[in-house]
Image (cartoon, rainbow, N blue to C red; front, side):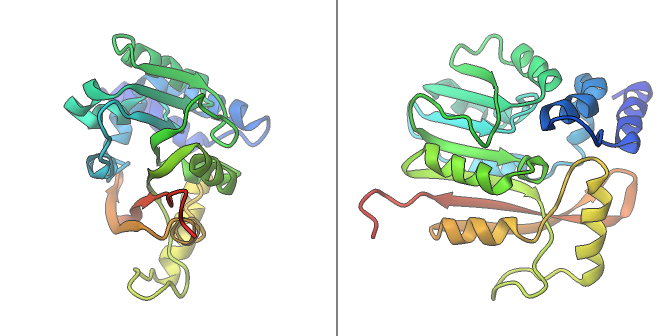
Length: 244
């Protein structure tokens, strides 16, 4: 990544997300100037994506949906498995990022790039796998997005999430507890750019999908060498139709 490109991304981050307009307009105003350089910078910021996608186990001919797909970069983490998918839908509201996604997937006939809201979009057929990668923290109605993801999954389908978060002050037994400084600092730091690490996302996911796997980690942040931001990887399986 060139110094000029890095400077453009940093300027967008310092300027922050616009405060007015619809959610789609705010996203376009923030990501439009940096869309061409989005992936190169985020490779150093958005950790755990490859690990989460490697844990997904798509069946042959799988129908896979990414909500908040951005540039489509995450799809490449599937590697050779991608060739065996029946249909892939990349859903996002941000037009400049979708331009990059369409360019990236132009030679992938099984991939459809769709401009739509993650809270309301519904595929024609239920999906085997739905996942969010650093998207829930950017969706104002994140509860609606989770509900919608579960609704579009087949029975026993798999939901994957990787994202920033902070813990509850008193999390459930066995979960990581962050100190008060961590819980206060990261939501304030990211909010300027429209990203909202929350203590509420993970408890809701765990409540809605009891058949689950959870990994809690910390990772470095560009230009903040002494700090580590918390993130989690969550995989949950939707209950089968005969569940009581």
